[in-house]
Image (cartoon, rainbow, N blue to C red; front, side):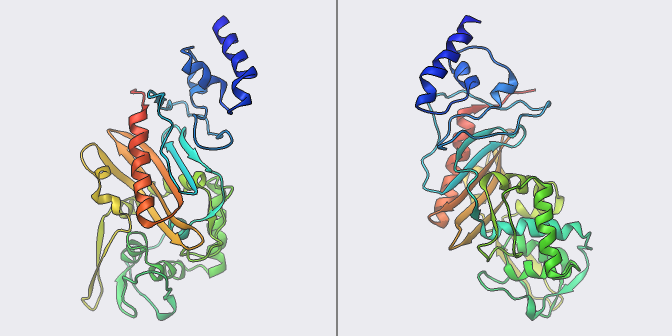
Length: 324
């Protein structure tokens, strides 16, 4: 009891004048026993203000920081967020609540709304000239039959803008109805700082935060078909005419150390427009433990992947997950 009082006095009269630190974490670093709920509080990060976290659920305790000398990864990205996907505990954060353009990460929300219309993914559909959207490679043939599931796959794996716009049309919803549904779903998911104005991500008005995007990606992972596409390094689609088009995933980490041995990539999506910079969200599993990583506003295509890789490895090396 006396040691707890001493810790609180130290916090009140010294530490808070220099750096915002949660009392529970100070007690933890001083070796004072604390509760699992307190350990769900934000850990030290690069944010200028404390990070507000969701409390851990009854079933999942947050990981514990066991390398107390390590404070994170140096990154030039504008916003970064790393969290344990089971408990929701933040492990590292830099401007996680800044509202920013997100580019093609928008496609995850488009796919979720499209799937909410209960489409027949095995049906044959046609890509029309009016579906064309510039700004990215087109992996689908115009005026040629294609399975609807392959249109969805081209949108997620190849980040095909034209395929994504076709999904909106083929949903049966009017364009304004589809956008309304995207924003309504964002509210349902608790993405309070997110707004969508079009379906592909080419508009700067599609905005979110690094923290909000965790909710979006975790929701997308609940869909078997989206989970399969988000973890596919490549995809080939065959059209009625016999033409086969192949595409590589825009996520180059499939060929990295994060997808071998005890590591595996369990979801993700890239995004880029000039207003957003280079963006990337992903989930990485390591020996049964999983972290979410968001990197928004990186300087280059390679930087976003290098940052995500470094942050994931840092998290698994710095924290220890409780084994139930």
